[in-house]
Structures are given as structure tokens and as C-alpha cells.
Length: 161
Image (cartoon, rainbow, N blue to C red; front, side):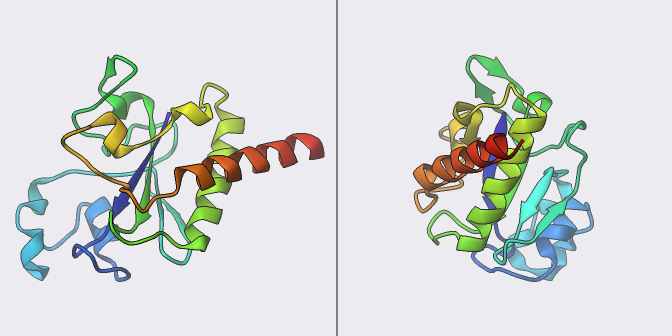
């Protein structure tokens, strides 16, 4: 499955290298008061899509990334073992950008071609696998748009092949 997340560091701020530092386990906790305790975390994601739509890969898709935490989906626990984590630079309460949706749609469509067990129903939010603990990508995320965009890209790719 694919798990869509939202992240900003410091919270509510976009740009800079703090998210990159977090995923590279080099975030300086003294850089911002909100970073207290983050130095003890070891988190990672397969991909990050920034506000401009640029895609960065941190972990090979075949390897486990530590993005889901305590989680379950369809009665199966430990989602890190069977999911691809995609972080979007953003917050629960700020709409995501057109560029982010374009990159996310293209990435999800490509991953679905490579991994046929990933269906649209298996593209979920962090909130879906850790309800009560996580809320991202939040109410500003447009699931209908994402699914329609991925579906259109898959149809286009299959008609070209």
C-alpha cells in the first residue's frame, strides 16, 4: 500500500532543510523549540514531495522506511513492513499545491504499475492506518482529485503501451 503523510518543520513552515535533516537523522534539536525530543526519533519516508512538486527519494522502495509508526490496515499491523511512505510538505489545515498533486499522481501511478497489488483503495492517509494517533494528510487533502488523477494517468499509460 501507499501511505500519504504531511510534514512541515518547524510546524507550519515550508521550505528549508529541516525535513531533509529529520529524514537523514541529522536534525539539530537546538535549531527550534519545536524540535525538542525529535533527536530521539528515527523516522524516514520513501519519498518527499515539496511545495513546488519536487520529488526526493530517501529510501529505496524495496526497503522498509519508518513512517507509519504503530499502525494497522485491513486487520494487519506494522504497516512499515508493507507500505511505501510518501510525505507531502504541508499541514492538515493548508491546501496542498497543484504541483504536489501532479507529482503525487504521477508517482502513485508509476508505483501501481510496478506493484500491481497496490490499488486505489490501498492508497491511504496516515490517519487511516493510525486513527486517533495521526490526522495527516488532513481535511485539506483532496482524495477525490488524487484518485481521479491517478486513474487518468493509468488509463493514459495503458492506452500508450
